[in-house]
Image (cartoon, rainbow, N blue to C red; front, side):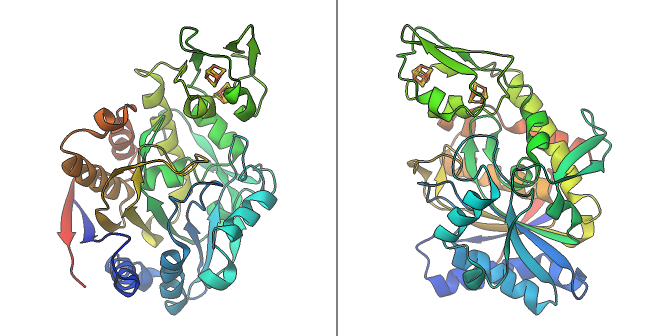
Length: 356
Ligand code: SF4
Ligand code: SF4
């Protein structure tokens, strides 16, 4: 059974206390003692889409780099480019946006890199033993790093039910091709009774797969790459997909990419998850979603499956029901079940509440 450490907190907790909480939780994972001097350590984080303020505050992320530097490691903060259009689709725009959101080398005490290069095709093919893949395509800088810290923000997600440690690694650590392989199960369709022909989906589709004719949208399945962006941006909920089958497949494929990201650094990785600013949609949306529930706290573990299981349990306890009921999004269980099956960790955990 894995151990997950927890400290209740909100983003309104005094900053000095929050800073101590992050440092204390990070130390509790024991990772600093397992690092070797000079270990190039990827700190995988989401810098937030333009217009979205749900991302982890940079001053709290900086606590992790201070702890890593004190342990003799060489940290760098990193994320990968997106499949869909927006300010994170190439490394130049992505880096500029990260800086605008406060993720600068000066604030973090460490450089900021986009792990899959200028256009998202800088990758390493990593061999794994999965159900869907024997080889996954991982962003090069993440694959080459000697150690890894995932800083995760728990949110709901339109395809995976929720996103936290496994999604930050699996979807967020894959190259563009790796992301495409995960999304291949998603094939949206337009509910013509709900479509108004507003063309918002056309604006966001990076492949030109959507056309609006006679005030009705249609999707060309041959051009669609399954990025799911049209689902999230349609203001009339007219874009739909098969909720029974597709999300579970995407979750399983995502988890197998997380396995690839962690390959070789299983003993040199740790995960911190912020249960703060929790929204139904992820930080990839270019809007600030309403909060789903009040802040809960921060979790830490060396086990990415256990920390996600604990995060989901804490959120559902606070909601008094399932996350799927509260968000109208798919059941997220497939990612936990499959992650355990492929050996990423254990969904059985002991929650240890710490005090600072
Ligand atoms: S965004 Fe929705 S309502 Fe607007 S054209 Fe696309 S499918 Fe139709
Ligand atoms: S039609 Fe396909 S490629 Fe275009 S936004 Fe929707 S899911 Fe993505």
